Length: 391
Image (cartoon, rainbow, N blue to C red; front, side, top):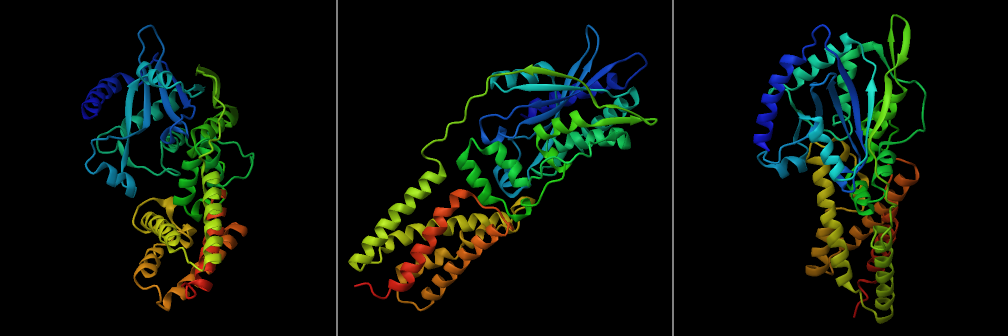
């Protein structure tokens, strides 16, 4: 990876010697938009800028803001805490497209109707962004990613001459937008709803929707360039570079909704059995509240100890609460402790609060959470009323 970027740096230095537009030189500027892939990291699509020099020996380059270096010290720690830097890299178009062809991901191109001055400003901006001291940037999934960096580059290059459409499309929250792309990955969808907080449950503006490459492509298609009072479309030509048949998403029987309802059914049957036999079945609670407590540690870590902006105000912490681990300890080591009853009342109250937050639209939770919340109420109630009656 490091060698690759050193070679890329030499390439860009050589390239920009000739990229400074001279008279008669013509560059075609395009926005590339890749279809979503089948893995979580690629499920939201991708964007890049293509600069193609017209002529028999013209260069064909792709500027990509969506890359990072696996050799970064403490890579996984920085990735987890939101401190990982992404960077701008440059590759030839042939090298870029072969990857998408290999993974069978569609690729579309929108040729932009920029004048020579606008192209000059864009090239100068990209040149400046590729400087070793500036090519790295702090990634943010919603506000500073491979798509928004491209949008911002065109805004800087074109200023007020770039006019976005003022038509208002369907109102969608950030979470709604994400859900459109992770629907084929139900466990990933559940994990995202668990990790991200109420801050993403507000409507996204049309400009903010461009954090998703597909929506940015649509915005570019509807945008115009205004010069001397004359308006023209930003996109002058659209091309399909790669196209593959889309596979129908098939829901697996192991998706969270099915698994959690089955789990709740099993726990309900075991609870009924315990009620009839006068047994608490504490092993169920040790396992159940233990898992929820561990999830609570994850939610707490993401909210309070990382730089991720989207994990704040995450009210999943009301049901996936780290304190459940203390309850597990109490059930095992101090089963007759008076505080356990108070804690169980807290669990029931917190679960009701989750439902109210959901009902009033303060935070949207995964639909697969419903059986878990019912199970929380079931076991907390059962323990509260029966734990001192056990033989």
